Length: 371
Image (cartoon, rainbow, N blue to C red; front, side):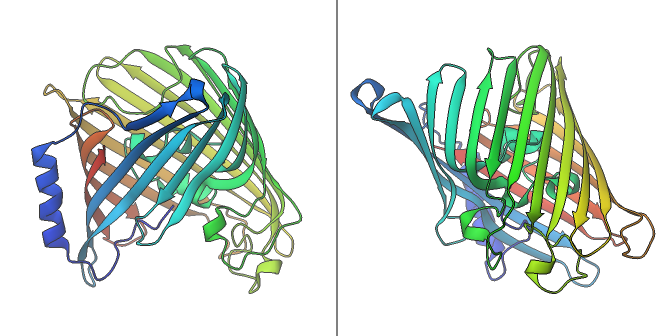
């Protein structure tokens, strides 16, 4: 995932005016995306572009700043090739001003609820990535989710996906363990691999595709999920936490687990996730981290409007030899979401305060538009 910090050198006021104009006009075609071809003829393609324009204000006692950027600018392309059971997805992202690839995969589906996928795609693990940024209550991951998900959420690998109806879904895969192809920098090939799996079950309703109310009454839902990741000799991050200078000395064996729940009733949606990671670096002491997040969505009497709230905590291990004491980090968030056309077109006002013993906080005004 690209950094959430505003990009320097872009004037905010004219771009914000354009953003508000698009929001006010609410122009949107009734059709979702653009479809070409026919699966029965061997080729079907759906183009589903997405744009997220964002104005950001960051309050800092030493000097506040405000900028505009495009948080996401995707040309989501999916369809079938040669046979209805062979599907593909390409998702180029232009938000940074340069072309980068998020998804590039092929999937063979011999049955309605079974598929074998190969390429670069989202690693199955946590609720937030499973839902996806455009469908989340808060577009940005919390401090907990960002810490325990792999960077950018994607890797190259092979996965088996399945389920049963709308109330069960699972995925298990083996991955290269170095993250997205365009974000590997100088990380060398790893001799180990990354194993990741996720399962979800909804005893009431169906497995949710979002954790919002979309500004209206919701279908009653109780959904439970769990994920597990394990890697050997991995250097996806600096697992020594700054104690080693070279990449080849920063690798570790680690295991991460998560459990989550989504509960929807009336005009309310609640989602909860908890995380734990055990890390055994090659050259430094072992440690573990804990995290949790709670998000609340409440639709308002005016249809399409929704209040959002979030609290997240992150605890770094007391025995990690980085000062010898427990270090807690907390995040508070609040927002107002206005859904013009469901998740396809919405405007979000978000306030985030990531507690780092300072008075820093961020305010985001964002508009999401799918054609």
